[in-house]
Amino acid sequence: MIQGSIVAIVTPMHENGDIDYTAFDQLLEWHIDSGTDAVVVVGTTGESATLTVEEHCQLVAHCVERVNQRIPVIAGTGSNSTQEALFFTESARSHGADACLLVTPYYNKPSQEGLFQHFRTIAEAVDIPQILYNVPARTGCDLLPETLQRLAPIPNIVGIKEATGDVPRGLQLVQELGDQLTVYCGDDAIAAELILGGAMGNISVTANVAPSIMHEVCQLCISGQAGAARELNSHVAMLHQNLFLESNPVPVKWALKTMGKIGSGIRLPLVELNPDFHAQVKQAMVAAKIELNS
Image 1 (cartoon, rainbow, N blue to C red):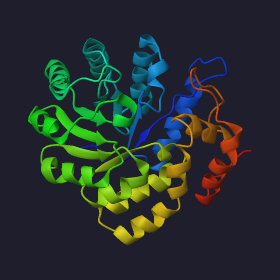
Image 2: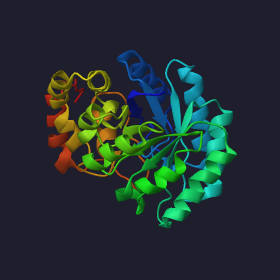
Image 3: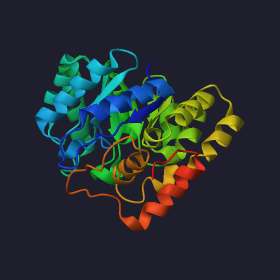
Image 4: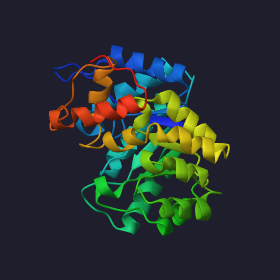
């Protein structure tokens, strides 16, 4: 079972928008050295929406090869097209990913029956552990607990990333489905409380810039050390908020640039962080004792 701090890793890019594989490799090594428990590649934070199909598959294959089984690699393979999600999921399986993360289909707003059929079709077609991903604020649809109840018996549907930002909703999933699915938090701001309540990990944006702290927070929560977990989490609480002052991954890529970890590349329609927010992001980084280059 994959658990702990799971970084939703950024995709570093050169100024012209090409993927910077050298910087990506350096990030992976830094995460492994820092205790990050697993990595999600080509998720939302990895700008999957603007990668080409070829880039998407190539980046998963590259990540698997570079990590070389040192930590689990979870490939983002969701799509609003069931056939495309099938293609990405099979590609990830063939390239050796440990699991896949499948976001609910966005924009076309399927019904609950449509969501059930979508995820069942992919799970029955591709033999790889699959974590479903519910983020209604981005997708326009909500994978309801009763639909998860229907999906949970499918053997290779193994988890749910719950990113509604709703602690009671997350705790409901732990209580009702925790014996069938691993529940992961998809919202850094509530991750500590949700893991203390029985979730098994956090698929994290904050871990991009504070990997060792996020690893330790998750481990303290999993082991039930609530006081120590909350105290340590308070050091990064401002990051949980300020890394979302603009759409993810705009602030976190800017933060990594100020740390000297990546360049300034980001793909349209996203642009670099508005200067009006620079001071707030830096303030959060200083509070977390993150070393800045500029």
